[in-house]
Image 1 (cartoon, rainbow, N blue to C red):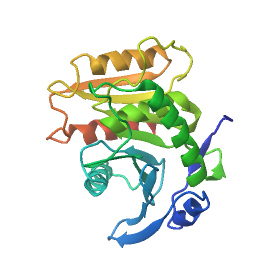
Image 2: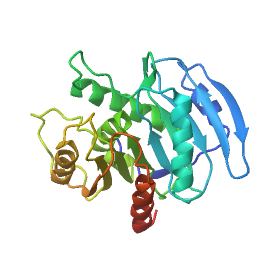
Image 3: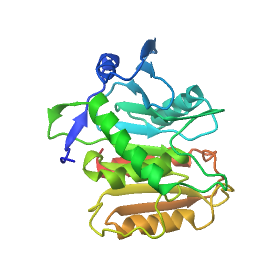
Image 4: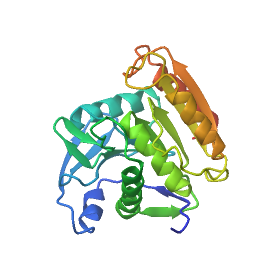
Length: 255
């Protein structure tokens, strides 16, 4: 793929762009609050869907977890972006795998393990979707930051490794490595790409070493990784440390 070094401008007419892809059935509603305008888009199952909020600065691209309806994750996304204390543009990317309790970005096997080959294939499809649905309107400006939670963090890791030039960095909350153990590592693949990794030391859905192992894997690929192992379980840290650390990290980047 050609290198992409552009910013995605989020705008209310985004539904019209999505319709041009031809294989998506799109419906749009708009909600207005005092400070933000949200365009909500829904597409057919097993296709990616997006919701967007306008603003200024570097966009955030939020990838949700699993086991909850999309509307519940949208509320988390809104609360998280508000907690960052900025009015930056943000995008909520809905997972493409339809499950009984909502959508997910990854599917697990019968023994609850990941399928690295499917994740890589899906990440390529997602990049194609994003470059079609969110075209650049200005040249030479900032790339979006991925913000992935749980299964969304797994998929965000695959995205930034598959197409690092498309993204400015990543915030990975309660992540797990999507990589096959035998996969060779390119030490220049992420070339000083900034990544914030927030794991939980009481996370029963992750092995104790998952966070540190992924952090080292990403460093081996050339990324600049900041890793915090928070005193929390798989849920959001109850004292707001996820947002506090994410805001400080973004401020340090100047994003």
